[in-house]
Length: 165
Length: 107
Image (tube, rainbow over all chains, first blue to last red; front, side):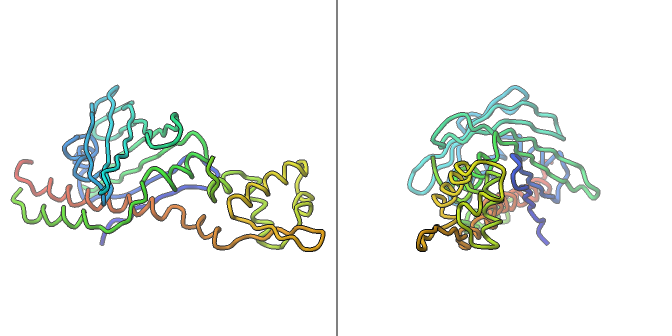
């Protein structure tokens, strides 16, 4: 059975949590979050292309990612990396550049917890500047209205199955 | 500034007003009677709620009555659905990648 993605967003609070378990040791999950080559393979929304403008994946580094939809429209976001503590914690900021006004920065802390049987529990805490920021960004801007066809995922899985590693 | 249902629920007083009106139709003054703040402040909240489409105001004779628009409230309960779905699809991709990393001879 597939691991469930749990999103906790208590009403009236300016933070939310994303929780998910993975069938892989935390060193690997951590790598998939911090290695640019690997991030490229899964972070992009389903119906969009993704490219990395820059990604200096270390404590004190920074990043800028760009998603492009089928119409060629670009959605960029950037942030600075506060901490890369392998293999247990990543702390960084996130700002979606498509908002009408700058400064709506989100602080993200990802923790990777080792579970028995080489499994990993991921918790991402996102702290927004205000409740309105959280509710507005989540609902409107941040995920650019992903219509979830799972097409890209199916394609990737197919590629991984057919490709000799 | 955009006016939408999320702005409506961002304020605790507005959430109380929605809750109140969901249980009974009230006039703006009837709503204000339940709060310690000024009628003007409540009137402003009601105006925002109406602009967000979460309540409608109907004129009946000399009085105005506030009603909740249930369809708009559904938006509130579903507000995380797309966000969750997009993370689900990313994590599904990540599952595939992690599986490949573990079977890869490179490791």
